[in-house]
Image (cartoon, rainbow, N blue to C red):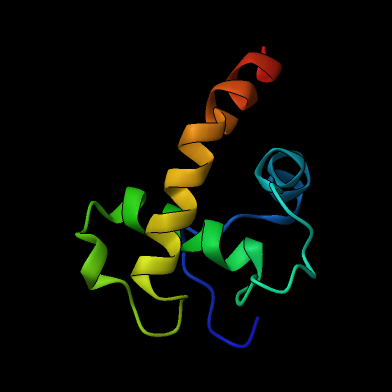
Length: 87
């Protein structure tokens, strides 16, 4: 990460838990332009800050990238799967 961390950024322990659920394709897939962890950090920034997508800071991946990946995660049911495996 080449930027100053935000309070909403995922920690290492939490990332170890969520990464297997979020990885719908390999990290080195040719269409992956941004690290998956940074995309997830962008989603957390939006959710924690309650801001519109288009107000994403410039040091995170573009809002459209984060939005599109979030839609893929929602369609794949990854957040529900995480919740089921927490309890």
